[in-house]
Length: 428
Image: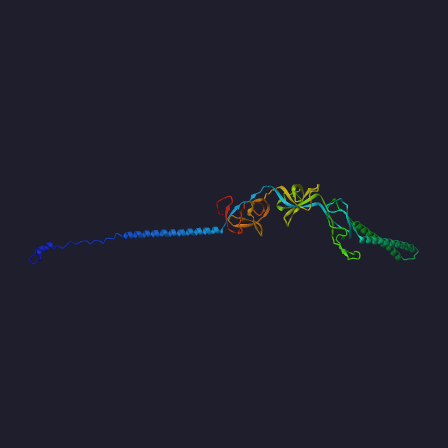
């Protein structure tokens, strides 16, 4: 209730002024946007880690590719093949020189002037046939002098014998001493020796005079004439100066060849066979020859002998082939291609021709070992087969030989290997 003064009555105050009940305070409510922020933050960190990992992986991959590319560039790829064995039935072609069966140079045995020659080059001669006459005035005079010396020695001997006989008679009457008798008997022996020496000297000059007629040493053909009428020649191995009338002295040339005579009914062909084929090149095998003097004809010959020794300078075996030339169509002194058909017990290895390396060290090939390292090897080449080469020494059948090597290929170089018959790369 209210009173007149406007204040509420105590009863009313009691009823209306009841204190309010105590309320429990509420906890502050969380903002709904805080959890989303943390979620996105964590997600961002995860994504950032993944991107960083991808970037690192990509860089590592690129570095690996770069290293691989660099290594590939540092180790060039080469093609290799393995040598193959050649055919044991082979024909080897070798150069040969054609020579006469017998060839001789005819020299003068006396000193003098060529008086006349009778046979020119190409002339067929018989053994002992007269080739030239030599005028020897000096030798003729020496012969006359020697003959007179013989007469003088004969006279001295006769006088010595007469004197010795007289001393023998006087010795019987004791008119001379024993010493005088012995002297006279010894003088007879001296004069006999003088006569023998003079006779021997005459005989030597007479034999020399016989060489005034130059004769053929055997049946054959004259292949060279190096004198003409009036030429002054000297005895073999001598150099002499002989007056020529009132003019200047003429000097002969020592060892001056007069004629060259060759026997050509049979020809000798000399061939140097490489050491690799020496064991198969034996007397009795047949050889076919192509002569430059008659290129359209193939001549058959037979190997008759070998030197039975390897020449250390050329590492070849000298062989001789005899060829019948009774027709006279083949000419000595020429060049021949000689073909031998042989069966070898150790056929050579064959490699592509473009495997060969030409350098100052000689013929070489590049061989790759199991670790991919190059070794430059010296080789000995047999026959050139065009696109292929026979190698007789320097490589083995299981070697990996580089085909078409580059000019920069070096010994001990590291390479990658690719088989010529395989398209896949492989690194040893």
